[in-house]
Length: 582
Ligand code: GLU
Image 1 (spheres, rainbow, N blue to C red):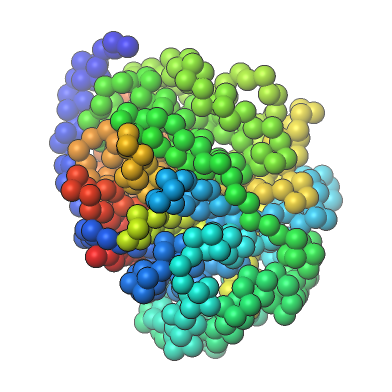
Image 2 (cartoon, rainbow, N blue to C red):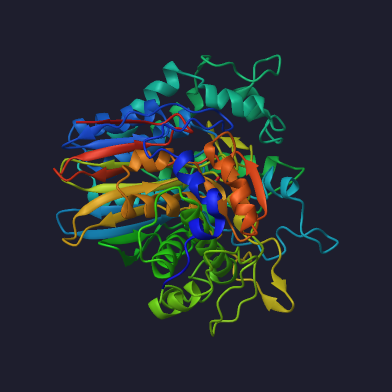
């Protein structure tokens, strides 16, 4: 498709991009908890990239001791439960892509939370028939879904583990007992009262605050003997120790204890929980094959839609960080987010037209709606035979959730996004860990104009997610990359932008992660505060965008294969992550 270039239309404005962004820019955006410059690690054999140094070390140790990527994932998650409690843990849910290198097989393990069997579509409605206010819904027991992390880890480790399950908790148990230093990020999130429910219930109040009710200071040596005890039981008896018996009873007691907002979770919900193996969703993109996670997350389909729409609308590789690039990216995002809102939900409960949404002809038609010179405004979803009314987006961007990637010496790899939803989840604690508030990812409203909303609450259903663990393969079916991010529904945007940049330019993955974020979820165009993206405001306004400048707090972690076969890490400068490898 030939189009006049923006440089012709916008004259000098269009020169801005080259002045604004150096490709090697070590971005230092001012986000909620600051930034750090990240050094890439190159590894020939094995590599771990996580959001916290102690979790990276725990995973790396398992690899050094002969463990596989599936083994190391257990150690990482156990440690993250302790040291990054605000983001993920065994009280939450996760999605895992697993690459089995010997058999050239990609597996998708679903550990998403489920709605209690006794929940119905009125879960988040008031007696007056109105949707509840967000905070009223999420703090306390009501929003707690059946946690899926441990069932998922056990399912994958049984298939792909090489060392005993019990050994994978050693580091996390030891550190829970000896303590770890409260990080600046954890302290800032406590200080900022990001979750107003934190402190309402005694367990979390006593754990995260001093006796004077001050947030724990940076460097405070925080121990968690209760978590050590829980992990010891899980190490000895497997995930059953979590889903049945004393720990399960503790979880239900915590949910019931929230008498101001009680939940519906029962012992039977925990006992009946099953992690599920699904089929990864893959499509060709340029010289690669990009694979994501299918529903109940919208992440895989929407990410693939964005990059495919960009490729179809403009086959030429646009200069990273140019206005042309961001115009194309925001327009493709609008179209994909519109489809997401209408069609995506748990496909075990509603019919999700996956093939239609990724059909080349359908996407080609949709890509024709992209005009390089004008913001299209609110995009409508595509017309598909499936007629589900739209669910309003109920997942605001929150600095919770964690993404980690691991590759082992046999070439097996994991790409896992793990979450308790809001920072500090429901704020309820049991057994030394926080319980999720993932059920607020459902649509609070069950129908609109008499039509059912795809993502309405139903018993046993999994709330629609945005989590987007990704793996990329080359033409010879070799794994070349794994990545993902936290960020609520902006996850998709963060992942799609970096994927597109890496696969369409000479940027390293780290350089891509360092570029400033520009997000459009079919509404305003958001520019990352404190970065050179702010200077895009005027040129984008000229194209008709409504602009908002704000923190865009991703936590991208990934790796990419170099031409010599070695792996190179990439760590988001916006969080506290690290990489270790050899
Ligand atoms: N609960 C969100 C989801 O599943 C993730 C929350 C976050 O990343 O902050 O999509």
